[in-house]
Length: 142
Image (tube, rainbow, N blue to C red; front, side, top):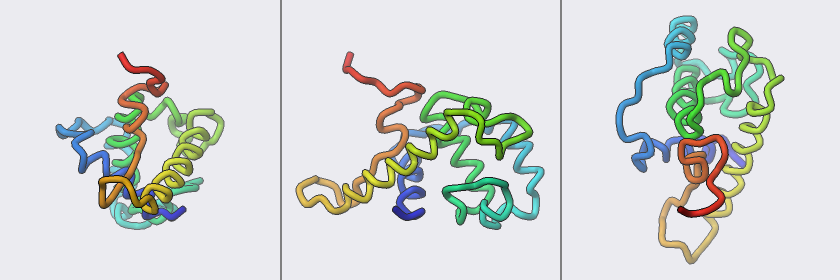
């Protein structure tokens, strides 16, 4: 799985209208952006500690992906996955689960592009595909 597919699946959030209005930036994200001033375009893996996936994404973009992508897709704030002021900590299960889900999403997207009988030139799934703004994905239709 490549970072390209991970980033592409996140960008689908924006392209498909899953994020149709301009959301208000989380104050923690605003604070973190201020703390990395001058380093916004460096790879996230160089700016932040313990970045396992999306290391090559610019640091400011990674924060916005977390804020406008993952956070909205699951309807949570930063503290759902992160320990405030110890963002690199891996002690919360949801952060570890998010990494696993990113890998799963990448694997699904890798499979989708190989399928011949689907009607889409750039098929992709992302967090919103299942979560739809809730931590627990819907398991049944209304």
